[in-house]
Length: 282
Image (tube, rainbow, N blue to C red; front, side, top):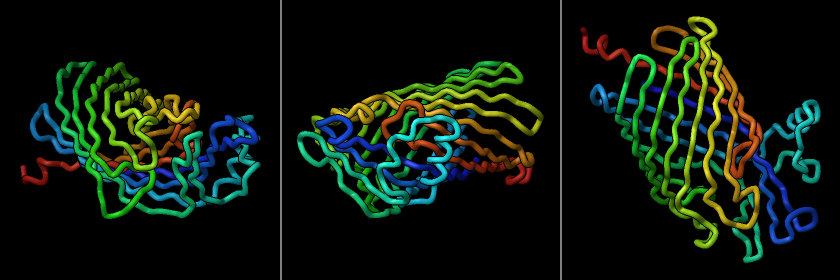
């Protein structure tokens, strides 16, 4: 199975000595595009290999005016966006010990190659379970100031339950992170606990509605509440089957508790399933 995921979103939070935590100055403002190529290959009936390559870009963007209107129409907090000019790029974080990160230039970077082996533990009529172990290998061709440039690893448990027309999936695990250069050892926790939960509701044979919540505990201990709290993001969308081998997903995500995820993001995924029996001539 091959898939292409493209996400586009806006990042913003502001906390200055004039109007927030007196020990923290945070000015993070950008729009970001994430493009991932994912391959899944079944090695045996119970064991599969997953490969994921991601490219990231940060730039001033075009969404600031729309987002201020969107927040006003629905009554969402605007996070003091009106205090900063529109369409700019800034990554600045400073605490009482000094400047943690200070970047103002756009960037495009291949971030990492993730390799995961996943083993099926149980598969029944309605329930299945699996365990996976993953390693993230840094790609040193380009520089990304927000990445560690080191090796990360994770172990995750997956579970699924089917009750037509609904299907539920969940995962929880533990991950080890290498420390980014911009943060001090005392301000970073190398162990985090990611989680994921999704519900799919089949509306028609080819159309399903999707709701996903995913997040993680924070690796940061900077003294800044938004950076140090756990992250959670809700994603709403739909899945559309084109034919027996191709499907697409369209969705939109909105943060409700987050330290690093986007405020608002849109996502497009195309998935192609390779017919191995046809390829082999059977």
